[in-house]
Each structure stands twice: as C-alpha cells, then as structure tokens.
Length: 594
Image 1 (cartoon, rainbow, N blue to C red):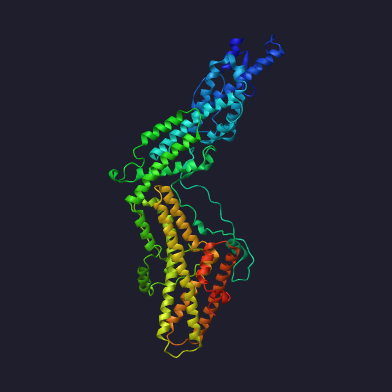
Image 2: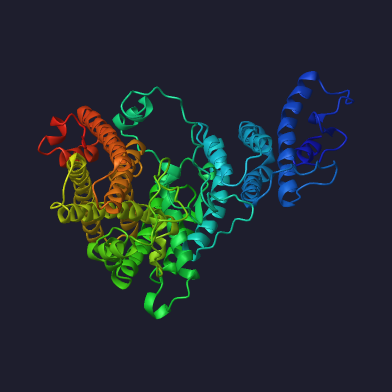
C-alpha cells in the first residue's frame, strides 16, 4: 500500500488511490481494513498528490511536457494564456517540482506548506489570465512572504522567468530588436496609450472685463497653461513603454533608459551611414554588455542595484556617442543658430525685406480666435518654413517639433509685420502733415502712437526677454554636458518655454494679443487707402478701431494686472513691466487709444 501511495503521489493513481477531476486524489472508500483516522491521514497526503497532478496538467497544457500517464483526460488550454513568459513560468514550476519527485518520502514535512502557497500563484495566473511580464510581478509579490520554503521556491521560478526578460533586453538594447510577438514585454512599438480625453468646456460667468470668464482668470491665477491640441505633449514615438507590463520592482526611470538605448541602437542600425564615419553606437562593447547581462541572468536573486548600474553603463555609452555625433560631427550648435535665424526671426533684415515685398501679394491675416494651430489655408497665417533635417539630428528635430517651431514663427512674423506696417503708417502721416488737417488726423496720430507703443514693447519682450534669454540658456546647457538625453531635455524645455512665455498656450492672453494685432492691421489698411482726410464712412471706421483697441488694451491690462497682483506668472509680469515702465498705462486707466 505504501508503494501505491508513492505512485499516487507521483501522479499515477490506481485502484487504492483514485483520481476524480472534481475532488482530486483520494483513498478508495472500498477498503474495509482502513480506520477512519488512517483514511484521514492518507487523504491529507493525497491533497499533495492532487496539487502535483494539477501542476503537471498546467505545465503540460502550456509547454507539452508530460510527466505522467494519460490516465485522465486533459482539459483544453485556457483561452488567452500563452506566451514565452508563461512557458518560462511553467519551466520554473517544473524545476521547483523536481525535488518533490526525488524526495516523496519527505512530502509531509517539506511540501505540505509549500504546495498550497504555490497553488495560489498558479490559480491567480489562470483565473486572472496574467500575461507576459505581469507574471514577474505576480511571482515577485507572492515571494515576499515570510515563509522561507515558499520564498525560496518562488525565487527559483522568478529566476527562470527573468532569463526570458534578459534575452529580450539583450536583443533590444544591443541590437535594437523588439522580439515580442505576443506583446509580453514592457516596451512596445507605437506611441503610448496615455493622454486623457479633453474635458468639455464649462459654461462660466462673464466678469465684465472684455469677455474674460471666471475660468480663464483662474487659469491665469493658477498658472495653468492651456495645452492647445496637446502642443506641449511629447512627440509621437516609434516605441514607447507599456507601463502595465512593468514589474513594480523595476522603476520607470530605469525602463525609460532601456527604451532610450533600444531606440537609439535601432535608429543607428537602420541608417545607411558610413561605418568609418560613425562607428558603433555602443563603441564596440556589445560583447562586454552581453556578458554582463548574462552574468545578471545567472544570479539567483534579482538585484536592482546591479541591474540599474548595467543599464546606466549602456545608456551612458550610447548617450555620449550620440552627443558626439550631434554636437561635433553634425554641428548641432550651428543648426540651432540657423533655426534661430529663420524660425525665430533672428535674421530681422531678411524678414523686413520679405514683408516689404510680399505685403502686396499676401492676403490679410484672419483672426485666430480658438486655437493657435487652426491655420487658415491662405494668407500670412498659412506661411511656414520647411527644414530638411540631416541624420542624426532628426531624432531631435522631429516633425512635431518643427511644427511647434512653425507655430512660433507665424506668431513672431505677425508681430513683426504689424510693427513694420505701423512704421509705414508713421512715414505716411509725416508725408501728409503739411496738408490741411482736421480732428480725425489727431485721432489717427494718437491711435497710431498707442498701437506702436504696445506692439514695440511686445516685440522687444519677445525678442529680448524670451528668445535671446532662452536661447542663451539652451547653448549654455548644451556646452555643459556630453550626454544626448540632457541635450534633448534642454531643447524640449527651451521649446516649451518659448510657447509658454510668448503666451501662445495661454488662451486669454493669446486671443487678446491677436485681436490687438488685427486691429492694428485694419488701422494701417485704413490709413494707406485714404490719402485725403477721412470722409464720414472712414471716420466711422476709425471710431470703431479706436473703441476696439481701447477695449482690447483694457482687457490686456486687466489680465496682466490681475496676475501681477497675485504674484503668479513672471512672464506676464515682465510684459506688463515693459508696457507700464513709466506708469503711462496705469495713469491712462489701463486703456490705450482714446
């Protein structure tokens, strides 16, 4: 009977110890010489055999390994359970069972506590259909208990599963290959699935200051930049993190380094560059890094310190090599200077000539009421620059980044154009000052002076306080590092600051400034088309412009003052300082043009 028990516990039931799919392995009730207490002890041992048989069934279903006779029917494989991590788990589970097979005499002492705990892990994977690297997380959490036999057993299983992860890491980080047919890894192809849906616009009360609502004022006071159509969102990437697959014991900062290295290696490998010019992005240390990954794979316990140190070493090698390619071989600083000259209007004389020549062939700029990215199909607002980016600068100047530069370019060009038109109006007024004047001429001169005062200060703020200051900081940060990621972070910060500090993303201010620029253009058009003193119709148009500019300048002053009073936004405060440096704006009650 002892022999029958050992066979049953090994997964081979017979006539004394029978198998039932619902109740499992149990001693036959037809044996008359067994005392009920003996049957109870044997059935308690049979519970171990039941767990063992179910373990082997699970392994067989998902790996095809067979350790027992075909004495009972196997259920079909669980739908949705598949993948290399699941097979690795089964392999680790099978490894864990090996001591059981070799030490059945010690079952009650060693495995009666272990098997139920491991069965919880198996049932969790089955019931929740846990997939891929999520299995790492499940096994890790259950291995953190206080029972040494359970912890040691699950650590063995986890070590086998980590072997799969290290193979995927080696392929991704050393060769740029994402070997993940079943979508089990924590890096995936395509952009991340983040980004909450935009909230519906709320109905807000009007505060009576030129259409500024309570919501808009709170946005100013709370310093919340309005992300117009995700303009500050990261550029779409070819690869991204699958955060739900990342085990909790691997920090996101480490996963992002892994993502960066693989993306860089793949970009480098896929480009048809001259090997003699660029060399290996890993500086021919692939074998060394592969050996280090293999060494970590052989460790019985996962060490985050060793793991992150190796990832940091690979990342630093890649980042420094990319820095060399970007700054020294591709002349990044020179390219940034070109971008500043053209996208950011650094070549002011060039654009002055362009404005003068194109003024008569371009249409007027329609007002941009809702979003800085709603570009009309024609006219000045449709202008943009095309920049053919050379490898490897394309990983810094992506299409999304260049579109942001074009948004800034169109805005700066509109301010520069209005300034030029107002200067042209001044020249016309000087030419006509000897002619007979009337009351409207004084109104025209005063309105033009006020418009020029506001636009000139806005232009100075944009070019000096924003562009020159931010560009100088960017160059300083690039020259103080030899790490590409630091360059990319500095450039992203530079571009975000330009969008923010020029108020393109701050809807109330951006809308107000665009209205002011549009009124200035309409005024310049009125002056240019009327050589003689204004007739009744022209005077009415002038009156509309005076009232409109007065209203919008008051609204702008109200916004800037409200933020200054709350000591929130230094950018708005700086613009107000430019406009109100001699307190003229304040003394006029915040209203210009009257």
